[in-house]
Amino acid sequence: MFERTFLLTHQLRDTRWLFTLLGILIAMTAGWLIGNFGPLGALMTVGLPVGLLLLISILLEPKVGLFVYLNLSFMLGFTRFIQSDSPLGLAMDSTLMLTLLSVLLNAKRMDWKQLRYPVYFALVFWLLYTILELLNPEAPYRPAWFYHARAFSLNWFYMATIMLVMPIKKEDIRLIIKTWLIWSFLAALWGFKQQYIGLAEAEQRWLAEGNAKTHLLWGQLRTFSFYSDASQFGAEMASATLFSAIKFADEKRLVHKLIYLGLALVFFWAFAISGTRSAFFVLVAGFPSYLVLRRNMGMIVRGALVATPLLAILLFTHIGDSNYHIYRIRTALHPSEDASFLVRLENQQKLRAYLKHLPFGAGIGTSADTGARFSPNHFAAQIPPDSWYVEIWIETGIVGLTLYLLMLATMIGYGTYKVWQIKDPWLFKLMTILLANFIGITLMCYSNPTLSQFPTSTMLYIACILFTTCHRWDNVTEKSLEKVMV
Image 1: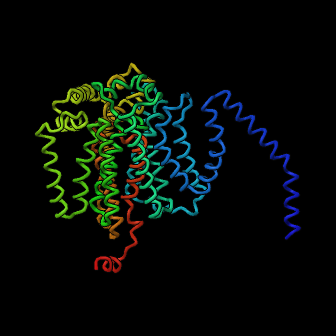
Image 2: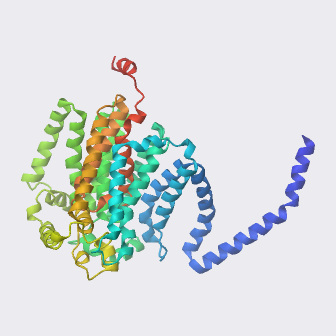
Image 3: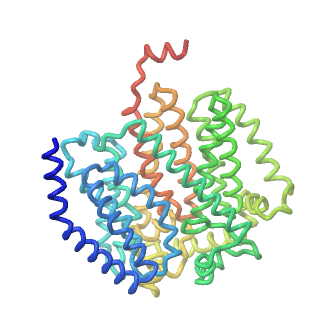
């Protein structure tokens, strides 16, 4: 034992020169990065070793890649604090592709039979259609396809493949939900800081770059936290409110009830200060969907007794109008009196005339910011879509929009069928919440492109696979269920 220790010590002494050389090289590299790139260089100095460790970890275990991608989805909004021309968003794509590569490298541990579900076939069919859009003769600039195809179909397809074949456990599902709630809570706190304390210099600069016209209305800030914009922040806060409020109603233990009640109140007020009126429909559609999915008439009646007076107050009174945030929520229920909503209808009338003879649309990448960048003179780039479904309609035509809506309907319908077969009470309640939230977000997307934005898109990609294949974690037998009931 003494001899082995002596030899090991001697070997370490012989290699000290190597560690010294590595230390000098690392110090020189760090100095060069900081000298040339400033704060970004300092981040790179710290990030490179961490990135190398993450790279190896992801290749060894694809589950690591899934959680890194999930967390990066929330962190992406912090890029407004980094002044750099680097395509930082590509880190998301790189992580997703590395995770997919890891799945292939660990193919023996993957369950490839799970790819036989209808939800996956629907995604593959939609992916093939978007690939065929590369041949659309109306597309003015074909390379723009790559900018929108990721949000349209590619990322969803990759995530579905990973989620289906990877061996996910209940503990992983719990961790996904906790990660989402923790990030949502931090986002709410950051939103309160913006609203009641003030904006950071980088956030003021972001508003000055042209975003003030949509985020400063009548002198009131539409809080956006560290998300891409206020609409995304509002959608996330409404989703978290829906989840927390339902958990508050379902929980039996008083401590848990109080925790979820506190979270629901925090998230709801964060949603209110976002000024995102359309996010209110996540709640308006999500709660009734949840009650129907539970198939409990008593819950439906109680839910109606609570919701009807609240909606009546918002619809038929002016109580609380002195508070700007309550007033903004109330206007969501009176679209005919909203000038911006009427402008959207006028734009859709114009688009209907343009797209009348274009059943396959103007080509993927021709509208919104990408269209304005690569083909600004094209009609598709000159009319703001103001809606995720309108954007799909412009770029893929009525054929593409129909296929996309059928895909969403397949997920909701098949998800409902699978959820209603669950015997595990915990799993049943969780999956009904995820499905109800999915329904609420899909309704909201009539007014906002939320389904294509991080982090909501990542959470929905994960959720749709969870509730459409939820039987994978339903290990409660009829006998054990009877014992629980007794």
